[in-house]
Image 1 (cartoon, rainbow, N blue to C red):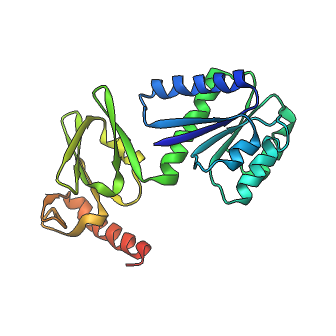
Image 2: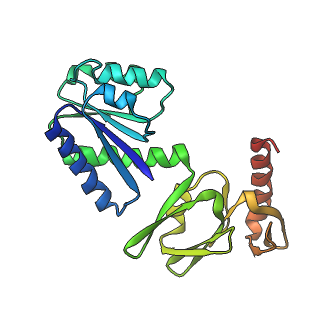
Length: 237
């Protein structure tokens, strides 16, 4: 679930931004998200919500958008901050609060989409806790920690999970590799394995904690052993 906040004292602008966001998420077939709107900085600061992305207008009554951003950072909030404003001259101030991007009003659809593409990539790298897969007309959120291994059969990827269930969907293994984190290793051209569940490698097979075995390319067996040792060291095992 991706959580968005829009903070703008112009209702029409907030509505327009929400519309752009809805159109983008629909185009990407992503339904696991929520949007909260705030009419001023105080309302946002008083909110108990936690947001992945915050769109902030700069020209608001005190605290304005820039001051609101400073207060958020002082509180340790690590949300991606995107300023939406008519003030070109404030772009350099945005660096002081580690703004993710700076969009000018009126919003340009193509520019907005490019920013959102970067947002999604950043969130995947930052959290790397789950992935959203498209299944038919719906979608499913799968925790990376629940995936034991991923298997390609035909044009579908099958996610084998630690509860014994399997989720299949259409995708390429190369695309899935870009979405998962360092705990996953490509042990075979058709398999990605979660190193958390690997207990060894022998005779061209990966031994998994639940007793299963999956293929390992002969050329990748040594790399798998090295990757497993590095991963265990990074975890402090």
